[in-house]
Image (cartoon, rainbow, N blue to C red; front, side, top):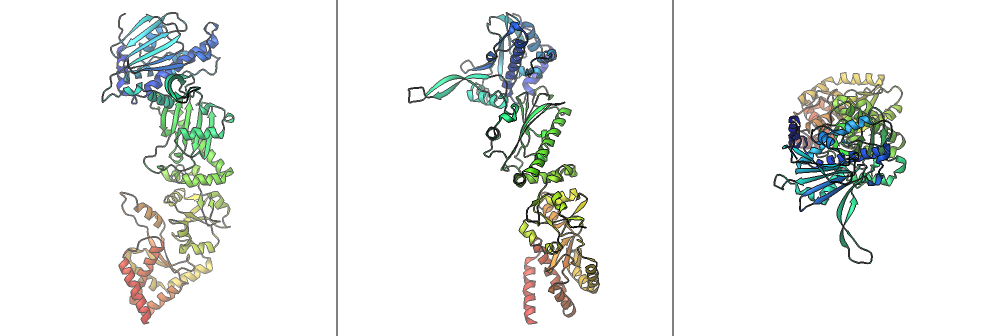
Length: 631
């Protein structure tokens, strides 16, 4: 029995596979099980098409045996087996697989045959844990059985053996345990069960192993430990079953166990697509925000399967970032995988799949918003920030597809409203969507600027999230209605008569306003009479461009150079304080600077800013109170 050498290119590829291509040693079992499943598929198909090769479907299975004493893992299947020539072709020449050729020969017939071995060279990943591999196989079309034995790069031998059963037995003689090579774990039942659950739970054929279990025999009081043969995989994926056959409880339990959540999901999205790329999808929207959702520790992405075989845990490319809250999985027969099945090629199929998933999630959310409003509002409380950030990200590339999913609280019944609902309630002639920003709704309600806007009958959106103004700036407008902050720029709320009266008053008091601006210096861009105040004395607004709320957010960011909005101090000409200012201007003009500084500090506090010099501010108030008493 002469030893044969791998071809030169095969030898190099084998070295790459053992040391480079497979970055996760655990997957050797997935690869061997996938090949066994492939062999079972072939034998099942053969039994359907050839009367001479009939086989009971219950006989088709995979078995795993662990031998700690001899340090071996044995994987046995009752599949189609291999002839001597097939052994030479499939195992002697690396990167060759009979599955692709087999699939090309399939004609119309059994529609439920799945060939997953076409990926090719996964068998050799076993050399990551094994120092020697023995393959014993007998083909369903040949009476003679053969063995294939190899220790890796030094070549292989093929010899005839005695084997009664059709199928293949692979014996892995494990490497010696070392500090750098922890292989003993693969001799533990728990490890094998865990790997099968993770990677091969939905292989269509039963995977069996003799395991230790505890049970109480009939007529006995004490439990006893016994060994029994158990099927370790569930075989039929939930997502491949008809939706009409699945109960809500089954969906809930699957989600909770698969994605480690105590709560049942808020929404289940289960569907299948057939076309250029066919796939089954089972997606879930969680009921609560995960504790680490907004931290760097949270890993978004969908689980990816190919023909029921687990490929990747967090396939980020299948979900846009603004839908990162979705959990679930995709199972497709049509994906192109690289040699290790670990890295997906960035090809047209993947991009098409991602677009289809995104459209389905969006349509589901739109349906929730339309038909399950209460449930959608609860979802938005949990994950609305993701949608808002999605509008802002990538320079607004996604705003058109997300803006109709946004909700904001507003002065209209203090309830959630969509932008479309807001626009439908706008007053005749209103051409702007008004909003006000603040930390809380209660704080916004008390803003001096709110009073007159509401008095004019306009609805105001409450912007309480940091991202709200940034998103509004990216959208710029909705249905040709521009977004407008009530504490920024000119609101243009006055009618013609009010505008004329304000202009006259401004001209009359120009020296007073100029002196206040001079006293405040570069703290403000302008001091002017206000058309937005009704009963309040003063307010601080920003010029067009950067708002004061955006200033706060940006200055809280790490490594951010300080920015400052252009501030404008507005005074209510109809408030008694203005009459006081006019009087001080006539009698004690030297005090105008102190009054201006006090009013500016008050306006800062109203807007949620710190007073620049609290001690000076307190002293000026005391001085003013003393002077007022003396007068």
